Every structure is written in structure tokens, then in C-alpha cells.
Image (cartoon, rainbow, N blue to C red; front, side, top):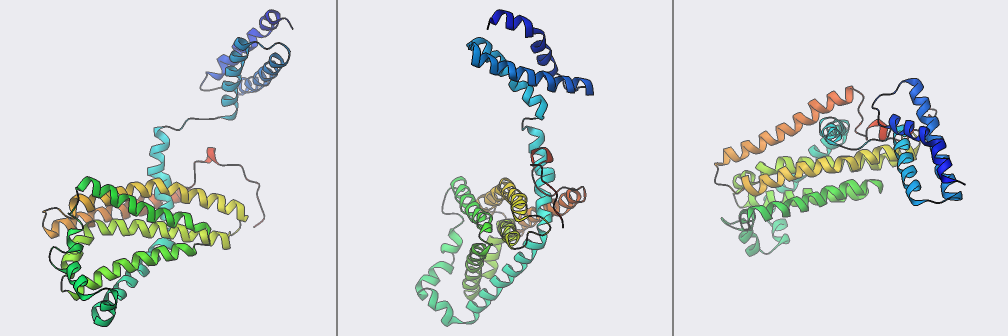
Length: 334
């Protein structure tokens, strides 16, 4: 094959294809022309590779075919628009859609922690079975481990440690959902048990007010995030059991994408909670001011979830990836 003749014969087609791939809007006729020229350029590239390999021409045609494929298939680049859409639409929609899971979990968890705290405070023999009396006194005394926990390390490193620990708990809740959600129950129970024991020991020492003053500034947002992650994990586990009108593979794909897609948003919320725990909880602010900051942070999160989330869901958002990024699915009978 004579490359010079081949190039001169098809040069005009390649130039036209290049021009069409650079346009933002195409008419119907231009779109049809784009598809036709893209198919021809693909054939030209294959012919050059098979009959007369030439690195320069192959490189030129490869780039042209790649741009043509992008134009034909409608590929796009992720940018700030996608970032903004995630936090304004997708993330709050997923929070709102899963509310029937994480709100009951939150209520049951708090009730369970309160019952554990009451049981420890009302039954000294149970309390003493957890640790030696000297150890309990060391934990609950003024300046003890429960109180010094928030201030015995530099705030920045403590914030990173808190965020890592809580992010790992949330990640376990999300990941364990595929195992029918059963391991999620254990993660949630462990969290409730630790909270209840702390409340019970400090209540038995007559220092519950101090403990709540240290817990509430960051704990409201932190616990809510864990409850959300637990709810998402259990919802995913239930999808395995009851996929509804969708096939099980389709339901798992959709719900799994929504659950994994929640991870960045939950990580940001936990980062805020970690900053509160490191910089607000041990600060010299009055107790009412620290608690007020925690209540405001929790109120903003709930407003975000229920106002923006409800608006997004009513607009048809399901918390999944954007429609251009979803696979086409064959309809199935309900």
C-alpha cells in the first residue's frame, strides 16, 4: 500500500472528523456524519496497522479515533460539577432514602446504651465485674482517663486518630452489608456497649454531667454518622434477601453503588466530628457553649439530610451515580 496515496485520498475525511469532534453541538446530519467518519477512520487505522505500519500515521489515526469514540459515546470528564452535585444532590438523597433504617437504629442504640448505663449504675456487682474498683476509680476520678482522654495528646494528631478510628467503624458497617448485614449488628452493638459502659461508670461516680459535657459536643454528629453507616449496611444486607421488583444482581449493583458512594460524604462528616472532638471538646469554653456547638453541628447535618435530601428524592434522585454513568438495564416484570 502506498502511504502517500492513502493519506492524500483520506486526508479530507480525517480533517472533517477532527473538526466534528471539536464541536460542542452537532445537528442531526452532522451527528450521522460523525458516526460514519469515525467508523471509516477505525477501518483506516486497522488497514494501516496490518498493511503498512507507520508510527507517525498510526499515532495520528489513533488519537483521531480516540476523539471520535469519545464524541460518539458521549464520554465526559469528572469535574467540579460532579463534585458539587455529589454533595448537593446524591449524598443528601442517599441519606434521606435510608432514613427508615438509620433513624430506628439510632433510637434503639441510644435506648440500649441508656439501659446498659442504668444497669451498671444500679448494680455495683456488675460494675465491679468489669474491672477492679481501683481501676474504675482511676477512670472516673477528676482528671482520670475518661476526662484526660480528650486532652492528653496534641489536638491535630488526636483529630487524625479519632477520624481514622471512626472512619474504620463506618467502613466496616458499609462493607459488612453484603454479608446479610449480620456483622453490622455486632459493630453497632460494640459501639453501643462502649457508650453505655462509659455512661454507667461516670454516673455511678456522680460525674455524669461532666461526661455528657465532654461527649455531646462531638458525640451527636459522630454517633449519627455511625448510625447512618449501620443503616446503610443493613439496608444492603436486606437487599440480598429481598431485592424487590429488581433482579438480585441489579438490586445489589444499584444499592451497592449507593452505599459505596456514601463513603466520601460520611468521611467528610466524620472529619468534622473529629475536629470538634479534638478542638472543641477539650477547649476552655463553658460547657453550655461546647454543647451548643455540638447541637448546632447536629442540627445542620439533619437539616442537610432532610431538606436537601427530600428535595433531591422528590426530583427523582436515588443516591446512585449520575444517569450517564449507569449501565443500561433490560426491564423485567414486576
